[in-house]
Length: 493
Length: 137
Picture 1 (cartoon, rainbow over the protein chains, first blue to last red):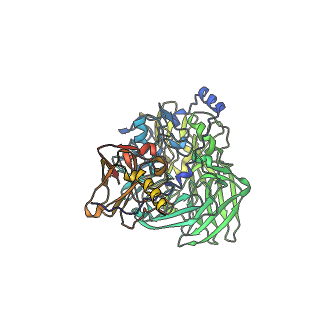
Picture 2 (picture 1 turned 60 degrees about the vertical axis):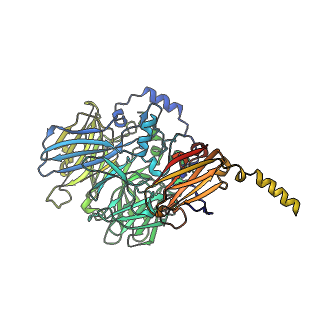
Picture 3 (picture 1 turned 45 degrees about the vertical axis):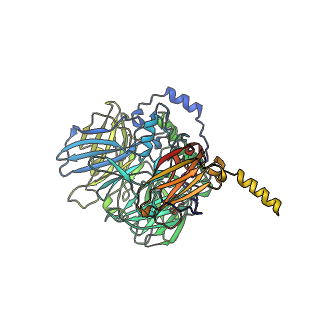
């Protein structure tokens, strides 16, 4: 009934990307920090608290202002919300289980629902009662069962609506499809059978017509993904990178991909993943610009060293100069160490990120123009993605002793002016998104929509601010009856 | 010449291949696709499992409706590795970064920890009529 053959299942080392994660290097917890963690009861600890289960749909209570006429839609957001289990806990803010939240505004009313991404990771860890999977800053447990990078995915970094589904995104694995109405998890997305288990970053760049560009990174090579607006794969090509930088985000103009290669470079296979990177400022920061129409056409710019997680959409001026807003870190200590401490409620002492403009001249010279404005989580008008624009939305107010934001700002690049609203020390501010006013076409005709955690009331709130009057504070605020921890990224749909 | 032949014969008789096949192992594969074949390798020691030659191999012709591999074996400890050659090209396909794109499985339905399942997870005893159902999808 079967043939015996000489065919032997050959087996390469299974996971090169992830395993890069493989050689075990235990990050020894620093006892001094552990002691500080024990004594610190940060007032912002709700920002990294555990949520024990899904949050059933519920109405929010309007506590300030009124819903702006014409505002209708859902803000889908994703971020880690389960870090601790009796048998072992995540060691880093980036490694908790993704909780997908839907903040909905409709007919003047607001509601909230949230469900955890039902991942293989979460199932295994629930069964064992311990966090098992290795991650960005967490050393894995030997009991973990990991057959592919998706098995270790917390699906916790962002969420996009693509082709009628939600895609919960991480950066080292596949998108995870979910139902936008029930928030029920479906399955990992394979864009083509021969590309199963390829990584897909959590920061795709979406052209105004909906076309999706993204990267999947593995050391000194990257997959360039191009998808139609409905999620159908249009093209996938592997490109070589000049260095194995940590790449969380990239940018794009209408014609070019803009890949910032910071000097935080993968130099060893180690666990957790972040322990494999070294900060090498002497190498400077490079920017790789690639022609979208021909990925072999490329140019490299040399800039002074800076670290970063997040960039805005880039654009090109008439003379070919490329500009992009970016939140520059002095180094990547926050990634390597700070985010361990955030999880434990320890004040940091690291400099917050600064809003800056990367300028790449057509002649080949590049520079970083700093603003002096503290900022993270930059966002812009999705209708102008890749095109010239004036405004960047961003969080602001982060401080060395309190790493999470309390304020939101709008920077106008034409005037160089930043206007902001500070919710005050009793709030932790999430990323806010740009929502165009229906019928409006001017870039300023828009709202900022996003949540804060009201630490004093112990609950989450949803705010709407008018972009032109952001300094006046929310035009509407709704309050939930639950507190959800800080999330990373999301989108209005 | 005769002497060396005799030595070889003695060695051969002592080898497991000539041990009494007193047990039968039936592996049933639950596949996610109906095409191609499942290629099966069975190992009888940890050293072989972790990098040596299989004691037995089999090909289950999924496209022709087969789902089982049957081995008549001496009782003892074994470990099994298999992959589903869904497109029938005779190899386990990988994506551009070297990760498998075709389903694979190990005995006990064991899963590794960022690599193939080790012997301690895949090892099982064959004694008399022994059966395992392996999910390979």
